[in-house]
Amino acid sequence: MTTLHYTAGNNFNAQGAYAPAAAGFNLADVSSVDEVNALPAGVKGMVYLDQGDGVTQSFIDALKPYIGNPNVYGFYLKDEPDPTGQYNTLVTAANLKAESDYIHANFPGAKTFITMMNMGSSENPTFANTYNPTNTHIDFFGIDPYPVRSDMSTVDYSMIDKAVAAAESAGISADHIVPVFQTFGGGNWTDDSGGHYVMPTAAQEQTMLAHWAAAIPNPAFDYAYAWGSQNGDTALESSSALQSVFLQHNTGTSTTLPTGGISGGTTTVTGSTGGTTTTSSGGTGTGTTTGNGSTSGSTSGSTSGSTSGSTSGSSSDGSTSTTTDGHHHHHTLDFSQLATSTTGTSSAIVPVTTAPATTASGSGTTDTSSTAVTDVGAHLADLTGHHTDHHGWHF
Image 1 (spheres, rainbow, N blue to C red):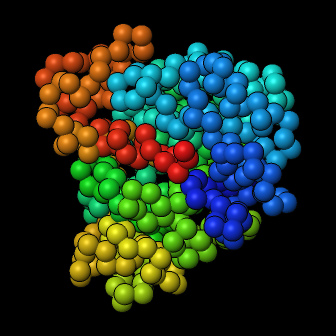
Image 2 (image 1 turned 180 degrees about the vertical axis):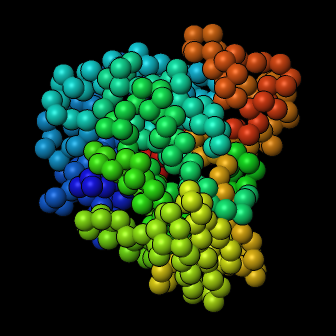
């Protein structure tokens, strides 16, 4: 197992202390030299640069204050850069390569990192013709499927396997993949099936961790998204139950599975509101969640024991069932929100001629006709939210 554990957002409390240390995290989300220098012993900093234009003067100025600082582990160049320019500012592989090469030349030992934008769907992810170690010289790539959702009756943990397979198919080998774990739910994020993300229960989180451990057993570091809440969601900072799960994961020697593990069995967990969350797994690790684990996450920090995010939220009787699959965040192209908020015309999509001709629908062409929004509508939710504001905490 990795010995480095990262989580994003609100890492420093009002007293300036590194808050995630209480849950065993030791790779900090930092955006200033003062934060780097304030890190406790045993904790390194991942500097969020948010740079994708190549080695510009702005890039050099942003990087220079950190060069040689022994508390710096590496640099988070960009969160889900868009290789097409259709959904956000175009970021080319060449620009990222120039940045990564510059850092490696001027700060030997420092690592470079990005999270990847899924150019397909949750069911059929793809990272083809985007970024990989060969065309960017970046060290590590975050892959972030978020399987706990409101729009389906089962949690499709196979989303993790599909995302890893897609990354490897695109030239990102296992030793370059960073697992990104879902530790948020509710708020105003929309997934690619028109539902919302649901805060995982402790049992669901353990199953995700075990699934990731089987897929990527020894990553350079892993990533819990997120510590800090934003856009009205509930996140790890507000869940003592999930913090307990991660304390064990981050400081223990193995991932503790729910009863029966990935391949079978049933785990029943009772939350603070009296409901019951049952996670049953079939042959592939998919489970069904019912009861109070399916909340929208509109309240936070009110659960205890072995479940999290299980307050009633917008569901008064806890009968709403949590999700299966769909498409991811993080932290991916969950663009249904944008699709429903636009007029449904092609003006929502910007044609790109300088980027690989790959659309979110995977058609291999850039379609600017009136049907384009329909084709990519399932991928347009996080454009104005979770993806482009993945790091909304940094100003």
